[in-house]
Figure: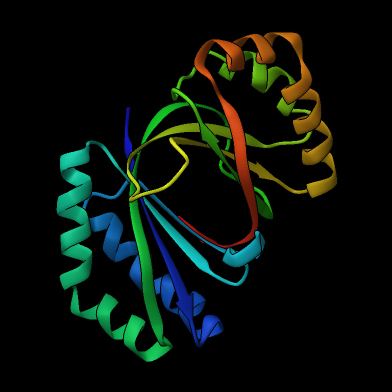
Length: 198
């Protein structure tokens, strides 16, 4: 499966940074990036207000090389400097499975512990599609010293509908069996507004 790098930042001039993405997105796609998306976390404890930017690559090697290329690109560095972007954390994830589409007004990320797996994707999607446009499960490859080992991304146009579907999915007997098998449990959630996407 593909690999995703995620940069967690704070941005002084967010409107200009979003506007600048119209120039930087084509640049990263030319580097071999398959998909990129920017969100601002609205709700998520200490993470509220941060801006996350994700970059998807064919392989982890490409993810590392792509990250280096992004960090050395004069145009991208200029936009970051002009907008007061500060990088706080960068992680790399391995995509285990995906259903639906990466579209909507909001993105939810549930951090999970236990052994990352995709066994519950089909079952989870059957329920989650009642409130989500898309669903993706990822395993953490390098995320620093953290209690989470994986994460579940959900794209939606309604947080209410997503929460109703999420509660139903987590409480289903099939999902509970999968959680027990792999020791999976939710450790936290952030929800953000999607600002830009390729």
